[in-house]
Structures are given as C-alpha cells and as structure tokens.
Image (cartoon, rainbow, N blue to C red; front, side):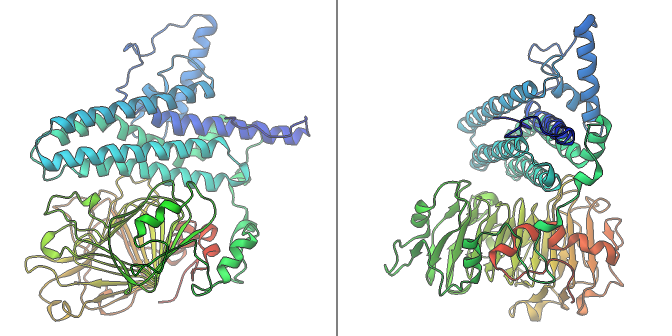
Length: 590
C-alpha cells in the first residue's frame, strides 16, 4: 500500500509538486496521529517493548533525531486529554521519524495486542461461572473485532487521502473512532448486574485502550491546528473547505454528478417495478423462505445495491447483516405486513446487546416498508427490536415495536424517515449520529412501577460527533397508555452517558410529556455535561416554562440549529439523495 502517492507523476509543475508534498505530509501526519496513537496504545501501559521507555541519551545525529521525533510527538499529542499516554504510545518505536515505519509498528501492534486481549477474554470466559459475565466476555470478543475492523477502515481511508475531500475524510474518521470507543464502552456495559469481578478485570485491561481512543479523537478534532503548526507547504484553509459541486441541491432536486445511470434508474423505479435480486416468501413463492437464507446470496463487500424483497409475513428468525454485506436494500410489503420478530430479553439471560432479532452491521444498508419487533413484553425489561451500527444506513417507512430499549441506534451515521418507533423506557438509545425525520414516537403502557423515557443517548466523549436528533416528528401516546398519561409519567430523555446529546426540533410534543421535560439518570450524573435542546417545537408538551434548569439544557439560536439538520449533522447530502428516499437537508417548519 502506498501513502500520498500520485499516479502518473512525471515531474509536473511547481504548484503540482507542492500539492503532492502537502498530500504526503497530511497523509503521514493523520496516519501517525490517528492510527498509531490508537494502535500502539491498545493495552499498552506507557512503556516500550523493553519496559524501559525511550531513554537513550543525546549523542550526535541520534540525539537530534530523538529530539525531532519527540517534538513532533508532543505537537500531535497537544490537544489530548491523556497526554502522557499519547506520548508514551507514539514513543514506543525509539527515535524513528519515518511515518510509514511508525504506522507499520503501530498497526501490527494493534492486531497483536487486541488478539492477545481476545485470547485473555476467552480464557476468562472458560473459567467464568457467572452466566451473565460469561456472555459479556463473549460479546467483548465480538466488539473488539468491530474495533479492529474500524481501525483498518480508517487506515485504508487515510492511505488513499484525496486532498479535495479532506473534510469528508476527517468526518468519517471521527465517526469510526467514535464507534471504536463506543464498542469498548459496550463491552464494559455488558458486565452490569453480574456477580463476578470479570467486569473490573476487563475495565482495567481496557483502560489504556479507552484513553488512547479518546486521544485519537481529540487529535482529529483538532487536526487543523495541528497541521498548521507543522507549516506544511501548499496547505491553506481553502483546502479544508467542501467542494460544493459534489452535493445534492435541495432547492432544485438535482442529484450530484457522481450518481451513476444505474442508480438513477433505481431512484425512478417504484417497489412494484423494481426487480429484486432475491425474493423471500414464507409460502414458497420466492427463492427462499427465510431472510437469513437470502443473505447468503449477497456478494461480499458489494458496491452495487443488492435488493431483497421480503413478502408479507412474520419472520421469527435472527437476522444479521454482517459487516461484509454492504449496500443491501431490503423491501417489504409494509411495516405492519412484513415483520421480523423475536423475544430475546435481559430477564431471561440474554445481554441487551444480543436481544434484537434484526442486527445491521454492513454499511449502506437500507430498509423500506419493513417492521421489526420484540414481543418479550414490558416485564422482561431490556428487549431490543432493532440494533444498527451500519454507517450511512437508512430506514424508510419502517416500524419498530417493543417496550424497553426498542431501537438500539448503536454507532455511526443513520437516517430514519417516516418511521414509527414505539416503547416505554429509553426506547431510542445508543451512540449513533442519527436523525429521525417525519417520524412518530409512540409511548406505550409500561409496568405499574415504571415511567417512560423516549431517548437515552450514550455519548461518552464530548468530541464525539454523535447525538440523537428528532426533526419534524410527533411524540404521542399509544391508546392503552393515553388514559394513564397523567399518573404514569413520560419524559423526553435522560443522560445515559456523561456527554449525552439530544436535540428535538420542529416536533409536535403532545400532552404526555411532563413539564420538566428531562429526567436525571441517577443523582446529578451528566446534568452539567449533557447537551439537550428543544427548538421551535409545538403542542402542549413543548411548553418550556417549567423545564429543568440543568447546565446541560441549552438554548440554541436559529442560526446554529442548522448544525443539527441531516445535511450537516450526518453529511446526508452526500449519501441520502441517491437512494430516492424523501429528504429535507436543512431546517423544516413545524
């Protein structure tokens, strides 16, 4: 793999050479900052491989190299929260200043160290007696695999850096790094309510990994100032701006030039006229009777849309769109006609992470006219209907029904349009960058001793580009809950993690929501660090007069509200219009 290479270089102009130098420089710096800072730090405890740090003395050229290397490392680590951990990790290869060598050492260390951690987790799993802890350790192995995969994706993306798309690349890196950190946190969440000390052991084992992941996110967030401090030839602020010509024009409806003719035909086709690649039907009229069987036909790492038509029926199966299954489109006969159903739940021994009957990992997934449900019931507590960690995923005219933890918007960028999500406690939760547009949130009747919360967003690091946005939605009562809404209270959300972020804008909030609006998680946790905002909402539940007065409840002026629209918040103008899904890029009227 080559980094910063420009094909067909035969010398070129002086300006061209400067651009190439800038590309090589930025590629090297971002790779060192992003990959190495994370990679070397996985389970690395602040020492080099000989356990002696980097002591060496200042002797001639070697000493000058060491000083140059340390100065570069200190500059890269400047914006981080765990500076010593950052410096120690980047110093682990002695005084080398060769970015490629640092990358090779760091990346190989990532694979080795995470593999070792997975083996240790497997050993703990074999010895573990607590069944819940045993399952949590099993999930940690899977989550570490996700983290490795996202690091590899970051590595490949930056290795082929296009200067004209620097903003897009940095955004994707922040999304993927945020996901890596969330996977570590999800691993640790799995040990709640366990009786052994396995969770504490895992927390200690992952401490440095979490710190270095946070550091890498800090470096990317502050990358502009880092690059400026290196004074790379040919770099200007202009190079960090977007190329407006590549975006969808929401005022005219024109698609970007890069949308292929084939994709345009797909946009123009209705479900009735679209020819699917595979048909699933329980009555035998399709190629397969189950969705899981149909997924066997999906080409690995596919770049073309693969359409699966799922005919009417309730599909009681566990479906996983694996990481290699990209660009899958699943079309049903309607959200109440084609349903994927399950009943796994926390009370009966399944970790929350594994309770969903439908799980989406592969990027660019799209579901249309589909339903997802978990029928375990309120008494079974956490029981997810749909878990999504697919980047640039879309759900259009779909329905998700359960009680506690209905929709697990786990990680990465997601868009939901014209969907219905029903539940009781924290029924939209996770740490994705997600926008719900024109959706309906239906609060259901909980158990007698419970209260209802619509959202529980899980941002752990203030630099994460994640959050839950409800735009032009409706928050309403299920008919069975409606007569109880004055005695069984409902709230807009609560801070699951320290920097929880939820924005509700241009939404009809009906009278089920309590005047306080937001509910604490426990004590004062997250009340000063969360980011909760209500913007231009309507309905009796939108009255702000008696809202809680936490420091984390913000007033967002109209000129900043656009930052939370899908065009900006999840870069939707790039990837949503080619699907043909109805979409408003910016602000909408309530």
